[in-house]
Amino acid sequence: MKNLKNLVDEYGSPLYCYDLDLISEKYDLLKDSIKNSKVLYAMKANYNPSILKSFLKMGAGIDAVSLGEVMLAMRIGFKPEDILYTANNATRQEIGEVYKKGVLVNFGSVGQLERFAATHPSARICLRINSGVVVGDHEYTSTAGPDSKFGIRLADLPTVRNIIKNYNIKVVGIHQHTGSGLSEEEDFYRGVVTLAGLIDLFPDLEFVNVGGGIGVPYKEGQEQINVQRIGRTLRRMIPSELEVHVEPGKYLVAESGHLLVEVTDIKKTKNKTVVGV
Image (tube, rainbow, N blue to C red):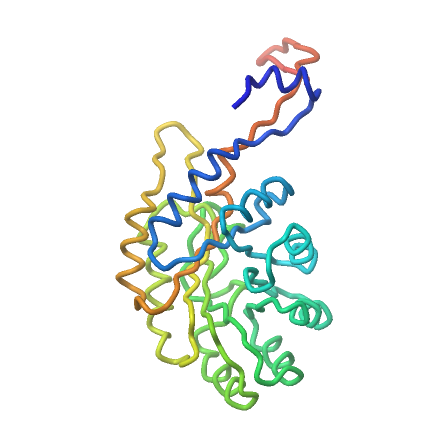
C-alpha cells in the first residue's frame, strides 16, 4: 500500500482507503478452505463500488438484503444467478421486482412465502431457517433464537412443506444466519447441524448456505478464526454433492479499511486530552 500520508497529500482528507490485496487474501483463504463452495459477499458490510468490482473479478457472488443492493450489484456486473436476496420484511412489490430480475429469493417468513407462492407457482426459492441457536458479539447482532424476527421456525416447517407442495415450489437452498461477530466455532456448528438434518426434506436442494458473521479480532490478544478448520468441518457435515455457500461481510473487509484525518486541534481537560479532527 502507498504511504498513507502521501494519499492524503494527493486526495485530501478526511479520506477512506482500502487495502484490496488484503481483501483478496481473505477471500482466497476462505474460498480455498471449503471445497465445492461459493462465497457470497454480504455487501451491507461495505458497498464501495471499487470493492464490489474487486469481488466481481475474484468470482464472488453477492448476499443482498434490499432491491437497491440488488440493482447496485447488477450495475457493477454481477449476474442475477450470482446474487441471493434475503427478503426480510420486504414489500410484496419489492420481492416481485427482485424475482423478475432473475435473482433467487431467500424467504424467512411463512406469510411472505405463502403470498409469493400463490402468485409465482413453480418458482425456485431458498428458505432461511431459524435454527434456534443464539450467537453473536452483541444482542443486536444475534439473528436467530426463539424470539428472533429472522428465519422460519422449525415448528413451522410442516406448514412450509404444505405450501411448497400446493404450489409446486422448488426449494433449491436452505440458509441460516445465526449472528455476527462469531468467535466460537462450536456455536457456528450447532446451527449447521440443524440445517444438515433438514436436507432430506427438500429433494430439489442444490446448496446449503451456512450464513456469515465470522468475526475479526478487535482487541489485542484476540486470534483470527481458523477458517481452514471450519472448512474441513463443514464438508464433513454437508454431503459432498451439495454446494456450501457462505456469506462473509466484516471478515473480508473490516481489517482492510483506514480512515485518514487531519488533526486540527488538541485540548487538555482535567482528566483527558481531546484531539479534534
